[in-house]
Every structure is written in structure tokens, then in C-alpha cells.
Amino acid sequence: MTQTYAGPLPPPDERRRLREHHALTQAQVARRLGVSRATVRAWERGRSTPSGPRHEAYARLLTDLAEQTASQPSAASPPPPRAPEPPPLTPAQAFDALYAFCAPALVRQTYLLTGRRELAREAVERAFQLAWQRWPEVARDRDPGGWVRAPAYEYALSPWHRFRPRYRTPEPPPADPADRALLDALLSLPASYRRTLVLYDGVGLDLPELAAETEASTPAAAGRLTRAREAVAAYVPELADPAALHRRLAELASTERLRADAPTTVRTVGERRNVFWTRAAIAFTVAIIGATALTLRSAPTHYEAPIAPAQAVRGVPAAPAMGPLSKAEQDLRAKLRREQTNGPDRLAPDPG
Image (tube, rainbow, N blue to C red; front, top):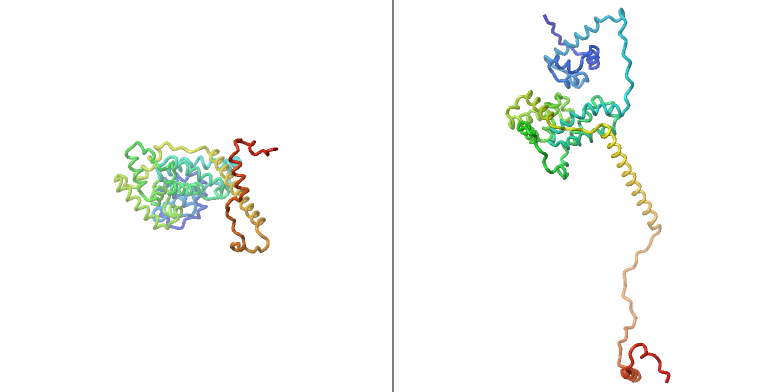
């Protein structure tokens, strides 16, 4: 007769230790319990706690693992030799490993959000460039992949892309009519509903994780998910089953030829962008300091009375008008008119 266990679960760290001690992966535990790998990861991190039949099955599995651990000989037989620990990774190597593991799937997810291949690649690269800028924070995060996923989704769903010339024209739709209908159904949803549907039915997050990532309450996240599923089912009736919707989302993302640049290229471009903006900020600061110094240098140091308003000048005699010629002037004019010589010689004095 199977014993039923309904007591409290061990702490999250102990759950992970028991699984790793028996060389089990999160995917293997998830298959035994009939849940997703993301759900097992959330249980081991303390983000959520199973309830009902899942609680009983998970508790029974942990109890069996603990009993097997206790029954193993410890002092009688020497422990097996431990393999030498690999050298610690440099920040660049750790970043490249995270990029190689997460970037391909993240590009496919952002394609489901936007329906644009180039925008999906650009959003993922920008998110990883931000992660490289804040790598100490990302490296210490409990879920580095989730850390990168949040800015990638935010960038991909930004409404400002509609004003960019390169994204004003639509991209070619998928060749398969079924894929085209599913993508049209996704793009007809509001951005928040689309993101909720992709995270839950595409990525496999549970409701607490979904609510935390979308910055919403659990009931609000559940309501968005329900309405999004209903809208997709009304557009494509054969996708009313969540399992069929999950399978079709994976197929739609996998059939598209989506690529991402090499991690070294992403790091290099991000570093160059940082250098550019740093220099631009320094130049802007220097310009402000120079303008301030010039203003202080040229500003008056004492009070200067303003210039009085203009006034009319009085007492100036009026310009005299030309009167009639005198007798001598009339004789000179008549003499000049009688002369036949032209040019400068006409003005030369007569020696006689």
C-alpha cells in the first residue's frame, strides 16, 4: 500500500540539493511529476509552492530521495574521488555561455511578440548589451535568463518602432497558412495579453512567475491569460486546447529562420556604444562648463545705467537752398559754353 505524505516540504535549498545529489535534472523531475521545468525551478527557488496532488507527489519524491541518501554508506566506504573543479569563467566567457544558451530561444520568443524577424534579433541583442553593461548584477541574479528576457520583451513591444522607417512596411508572412493564421491571431492581441500568452504557453512560466515578470497581480495575470486564450481560440478554433496552443507556438517559432549575431560581436558593439555615449556626455558637459565660464567672464561686474531714450536735437539751422547765380557766375557759365575744346584740356588755365 502506498504511503501518503502530506507534510511540509523541505526548504528550497534542500530540494535542489537532494535532486543534484542523485544526478537528476529539473527536466527529469518535471517529467516524473507531470509539470514543466520552469515549475520545478520555481519550487527549488522558493518562488512558489505546490498544492494538492502535486504537493503530495513532490513530497513523496523528496522523501524517497532523502531515504536513499540516508541509506547510502558514508564512513564504511571511502567516497568516490571528486573530479577536479574547472577553473572559474571570466566575465566574458560567462556572458558568452549565457548568450549561446538563451539568445536563440529568446529571438524566437520575441518574433512571436512582434511578427518581425529583424526587430526580434535587434531586441535580443540590445537586451544582452544591457546585460553586459550591468554584468555584475546579472551574474549574481538567480535567473540570468529571465533578467535578459524582460528588457528584450520591453524593447520589442515598444510602440515607438512604428515611427521608424525600416519598420513601417510589413514583413513577408509565414508560408504555411496555419502559421500565418496563428501569427495574425497573436498580433491582434494587446501587447500585455500577447506577452502573457507567450510567457505562459510558450516559455512555460507558472502564474506566480508570470505575475512577477509582467509586474501584475496573480489574478490579473490569470485574467489576461484567459482572455488571450479565448481571443486566439475565436480566431483559430483548433487551438482552444492549451496543449495544442503550446505545440503550435513552438512549431511557429521553430520554422522561421531566425539568427542572432555572435556573442563577441554583441559585446563589442555594446562597448563601442558605451564609449560613444560616454564621450558625448563628456563633450556636452564640457560645452555647458565653457558656456557658463564665458557667461561669467563677459557678464558686467558693476551697474550700468541704461541708455536714455532718444530726443530731437534743436537749434540746428536748416540747410540753405540754392539761389540765383551772380553776375560773375553767369559770365563764367557763358564762357564755358562758348569753348569748343572738350576733355581735360578745357579746364587747363590759359597763359594769355
